[in-house]
Length: 233
Image (tube, rainbow, N blue to C red; front, side, top):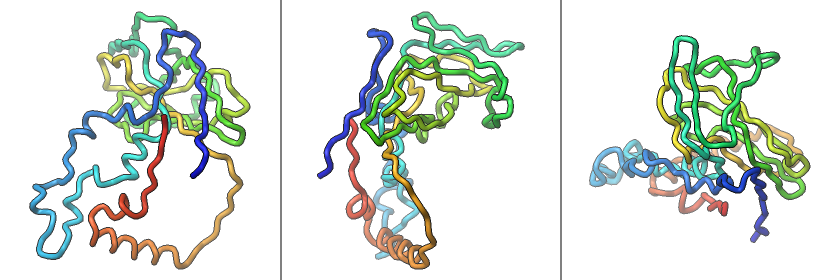
């Protein structure tokens, strides 16, 4: 059993919530989604498994994406109004949660489809420290396309760099309303730094096909035989 690693979070203001395990932020739409797309009695036709009857909850890699690492959340309600000159953004609690970044070199960045071109930033109030040899992937909350913004991704060597940094995001152009306190802003995923190389394995695809046939014959094959449980506390 591997030794549990420690990630540390420093908070600029004691009133702010520290990042929490991502498993605490599983969205309601996932919780409410059915195990099967049809009634469970239709799972099999004779001895043949209806693979297309499985709902998203059968996909452990999807759930791993939702629950991997930690989440930094908004610490106040954010009211956004649409105006002819662009969005007006208001919040009441300090410290400031959103800023803007001058274009400069950022005007060459591709803008996500359906988003405003203005470059916003989460004014991050957290320091992060990981053990030696570990970095952090900071990214938009995985699989959370329901959020009215898209946070950009970066990898920070958090074993040597601990000051807070501002994290850029784009706001969806059709959004008007409230982003409530407690909304995930970005996901923090510790990753171990290793040197890698790559090669073509001619047998690997065939092995994968055999695994597919086993998964069709056994419901929950990946979860029961291949999946490794991850722990973030």
